[in-house]
Image 1 (tube, rainbow, N blue to C red):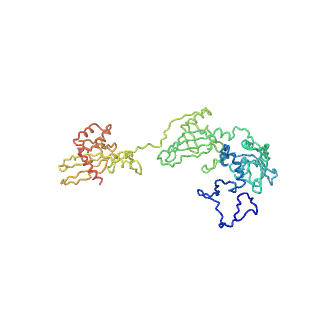
Image 2 (cartoon, one colour; image 1 turned 90 degrees about the vertical axis):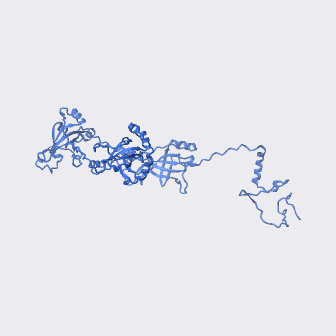
Image 3 (cartoon, rainbow, N blue to C red; image 1 turned 60 degrees about the horizontal axis):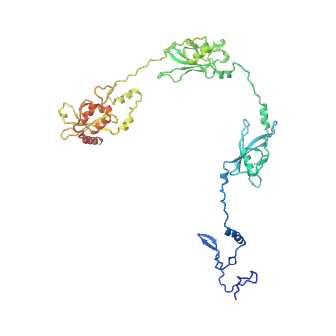
Length: 554
């Protein structure tokens, strides 16, 4: 017998019966997988079935259906976009609350003080709720000041609760690491921020004065030095860096191998000291120490009790000196005796001249001219060229003790590298065996050197090849003092070139010679260009010149 419990009967004990024909007692699957995610399976409601009767819904779902009915009828209301979330480290970046306060430090084992008041500054960083405590430095306090507590989050009770800006206010005490700090006031930004958050700040307080600092300021005494015209400090401020400079001649001709040496005498007005410096000429053979007498006060008169004592070992003290040298003792045009040596003052500088005119107008200044040259200038004579090596290398041996290689024109070397002017030439000789010998003259533009290559002729009995290594060839009449060498402008068709006793006649030239000299027409004579243009066959030598160049390189 089957009883339908789905219609009319309440769900009470006795009204439900077990289905005896049921053979499958497994638990049905309640989840469905959609796009890889598990979702609760909802039964499919058939046509004509009541969803409230076919599906067991919860109380919250039933309330949601009741609230959704007006939305289905009238539509949903306009939704507002949520405000953009800004994290604390971005909203409060570089925003710091600054409070001012102090703490009282007890002083032990002191009879004149018992405590000190030390002002501090609290910096509260809003981005991470960290606090930093610093103490402004006080001059001559003797206490290591600066950062007392580094930036960190501080706990306010033994339970570990951290301080927040809501816990801070003016006129309160906070305990940090066993030290009690008193907050007295804050800056305008902190006051505006706290009031904008609804926190009413207490009345501002003033930091009490430190009794030790106040006592030091009260007991500090000032000592006023009585005014004195001859005070050393006043003289230093008035006459510092004012020096009288005299040009003198030390007459040492009385001694063996003595001579007259030019010196400069400096008189320092700030302490009446004198310094003497020597003038050393180049290659004079003297040690490079110009100071003849170091800066010191020179005694003018010594007490009679010290005169019998040997002056070479006498150590004169200020008590033994009656008078020192002063500006009145130095007169231009007269001789002065300093430390047993005679110095003739023959001139002075402009400052010294103005000083005597202003302070000592009764002292005449009579400058004159003296011959201060210690020796005559010896003119160096370059010896004649001996023919060994090049002229430039031999000249370097005369210019310095350690010869240096001659300097080369680097720009010319780079611009004319591998540029060669080739000419065909024959040997101008009275010897009949030299008839028919043909040569190629190569002018290297990089260093103005000439090399000569002889073309080989069959059955001539003369071996061809290199005739002259690269070298600079001087012109006839050239001297060692004014050397002149062959240049491209001198090599024209028909010209005679004298090479160390041999005479060569230029018969032809390469086409590159004409193009190069035309580009340098402002430096090339017209007859040289015309001789190259009227050459019978300017291309005839070109293949032979190339062949000669290959042989030279090999």
